[in-house]
Image (cartoon, rainbow, N blue to C red; front, side, top):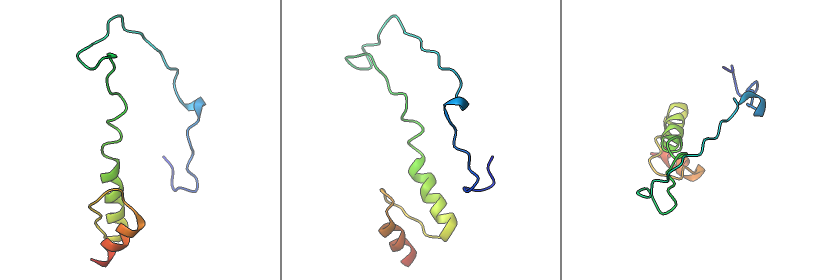
Length: 79
């Protein structure tokens, strides 16, 4: 935990555990032609809502459209 952004410690490659790669013998062709599946999407889904909530908590302005731009924040502040 960091007390504030000034003392925020950015993780480096030394902080990441070793990665183990495993190759699966069969491809699942039901997913797509290459047998690939999505893996990195879930962390992206709540990001915009988290940022919008942070803005609302900081200044009371509720931004309800993405991308969240400075002009949209100012517009929300005027409402």
